[in-house]
Image 1 (cartoon, rainbow, N blue to C red):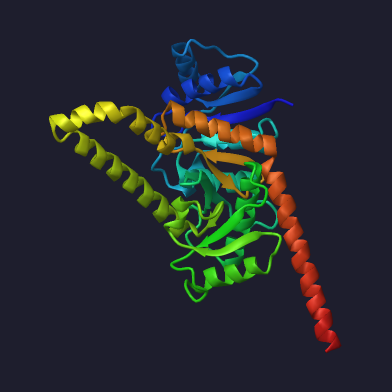
Image 2: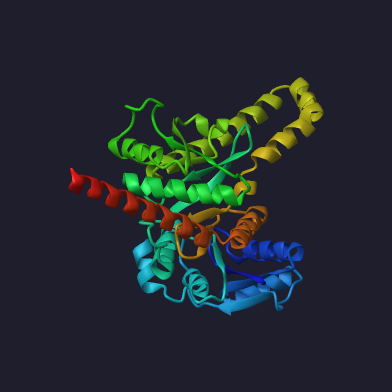
Length: 351
């Protein structure tokens, strides 16, 4: 069966000038994927011409008369932009014409619109933003990264289930789950985090290791790290700032004298290999996980390489049918909880 991805071609800081070339590039390597470019038809055709490409069976244009601005309030976009490229792309997923939507647009608007159009999977209270981050050992799945500022213990538990499914889709048979906290001791953290930990401990089918701290993210201590969106977003943005600062310090050090500049030429291959492994473009493409359809959020400032990786992430999630897997796992836990509660009620009646 052919995979079809709807692309919000007007979103992001660069719009069609980056998105269209990225789609053309991926299509050349993945002939079995069909892309629907959603947006202003005239502008999209112009960009296709610049890329020396044309529409075909695997590359079609779906006109949308509006676009969501990057600083537009989510409620306003949801209410007034019913023919935006973002909304139309999500409608294509809802209608079954596409299996996934990829957008570099306004994150808040995308989350609000996706939740309104696609709805959440039964048993999931709120979608979460999830992505892979590089670690010493490889990579780790982190969620939530900003969709939900305040989370209940039950929602954190749901994030753990969803993160586990995503990790399994990457080939990790029994993902190790850590709950991000201010310490590893049981008494640390707020009540929601401690309650979520108790719930995870009581669920042996999940491979829960306990609390992890901020430095564990990049140590690769866990395959999945769970937190609320407030903590997750701060951790992510702090990491991005640290990476930029480290890169600048290294550049300044090698540019300090004629000797260090000569040394830089010698070690350039090593530095390039390290930079490639840490290149944030290779990790672009966050999942809005927990919806009844696949939605991938690209960084707004993504270049062609980064957006292409977001498209590939969408393709991977289609291959594994992530929403169906999450729905199945959540249904299992709901059923088990119901059986446990019934057993406790019977024991109470007997007593």
